[in-house]
Every structure is written in structure tokens, then in C-alpha cells.
Amino acid sequence: MKDSSNPLIRRMAPGLILGFLVFIGLALLGDLQKVSLKILNFDWRFFFLALVFTIFNYTLRFFKWHFYLGQVGVRRISYWQSLRLFIAGFPLAVTPGKVGEVLKGVWLMRQTGVPVGRGISVVVAERISDGLAVLALSAFGVVAYPAYWPFFALVLGGLGAIVVLSQIRPVAIWLLEQAARVPLLRRFSQSAREFYEGSSTLFRPGSTLLAVALGTLSWLGEGLGFYFILLGLGVEPGPRIMAMSIFVLSFSTIVGAASALPGGLGAAEVSIAGLLTITLQQEPALASAATLLIRLATLWFGVLLGLLMWIISPDLFGFSSTRQPLPEG
Image (tube, rainbow, N blue to C red):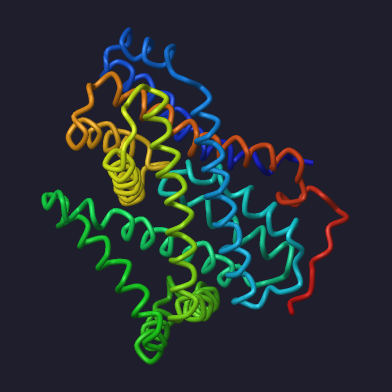
């Protein structure tokens, strides 16, 4: 049987190469010798503590994912099956524009029978609720540094508009009907309708508030993990350092997502290192080392977990002939 994961690996290749180049660029930017010395002197106990906070982030986001599945009608799916799908999506973040994440909709259809468009609506709702969560976490930092306000407002306005439009059903249905009249778009009309129906459900006020609350707590965890990375590098502890760590990581996450680069690579790293230098007056070598370490403990840790899930779950790619779809509840 032809290995159908090969095209996916090829799509990920640019992100993996870019990630390697970004690491080298950061090391050179901060002076390779000084950055190497910072990492050699790093207290690795703090790195493992950062991993604990990353797992905390993933755990809360998984509960949000599983909650969303129930909202779109997928209720008879085990926690293990749901967890496999959730973790297996991590490496897809390093595909260009994260477009590979639509595969989660395909995998969800194979496992549960839910329409692909409705499954993709879960993926999109995840991203938007995460975006609103990190915006909430970075809000106080933006107040302290008004220069970042225009970008903050633009992203908040864009995400808010999507949520609001999904709840104005007559407008959304009219747009779908107009799109269905365009020959090139007609073939996607049913999937678009399923996507809208899923999004309309997921962005109801109650669901959105719960999802954003879970997202805020989960990304707060990663911000605290970044704080401990800084402590491991010798930065003096304190409430100001903790608050700014949360702001720097949250705001940089927004920058990375808005860049549409694979995994936000390059944009997120430059933002983290730059904000550390500007807001906390850290030397470039420490800023570069901190950026390398937090990206290892978050993005690349997640990619590794996802690749391991691919190895133990070949049926996600349709290799297993014994897979049986679960009925929808």
C-alpha cells in the first residue's frame, strides 16, 4: 500500500527546515558563543517545569476540543479516540498557513462519520478561541506599551467579526447562497454549509465564553512556563517578570499566528526575543536563549508528541482496515 502520509511529510518539510534555520539565526543574532554559554549554564530543572505547564496547556485545550466535538454532534467518541485526534494535529501546525490542520476534519470524519466541513469548524473554532484567549492575556501589556495597540485591535476586531457574523444567520445564509451560484464554488457549497452550521453552534455566547475561559487558563500555563525558563537562565524572580513573561509569550503567539508562517516560525521567535529585549531590558544572548528554550518546550515538544501519535495510530491515515466509524449521538 502506498504510504499516503508522504505528501503530508512533504508539506511539513518547509516548516521543519524553517525551524532549523530560525534556531541558527537566533543563536547567531545573540552571539553564538554567548547563547551557547547561557544554555550550558541553564538550570534544566526549570525546563522540565516548563514542560509540566505545557502539558497543563494541552490538557485544558483537549477538554475544550472534546467539548466542541459534543457541540457539533459527536458524542459517542471515547476520550482516547478524541485524544489521539487532538494530539495528532500538533505537527500540522508547521504546515504553511497551518492549512494541514484541515486534515483533522478528515480524520474526524473517518473515525466518527461527522461531515468534514463540520469537523473543520471545530478546528477553526479552536484557533479563534485560542486567539481571543491570548489577546485577553496580553491586554494589560498592550495598555502598558501603547505602540502594540493597533495590531492588537486589528486582530481582536477580525476575530470578533467572525464570531458575530456566525451568529447573524440571515446574513450568513445569504452569503452561502450567493457563493453556491458561482460555478467554481458550487462544488464546495455543501461542505461550506456544514462548516457554517458547526461554526454557528460553536460560537454561541455560552460556548464561546467557556472556550475562551479554558483557553485563557491554558495559555496562562504556557506563560508561567516561560517565566520559569527565564528563572532557569538566572533572571531574578518577581511579579513584574512573571506578568511580562505572560504578556511576551501571549503577544508573540498572536504575532506568529497572524504571520501565517508554518508554526509562526520566525515571526514568533523574533517577537519573543525582541519583546524580552525591549520590555525586560534583557541582553540579546539571554533573549535568544530563552526564545530557543521556550519554543523547544512548547511548539517542538508538541510536534514530537504528535509524531509519536502518528506512529502508534496509523489508522488516522486510513491504513487500518479494521477501523469502524462510531455513530453520531
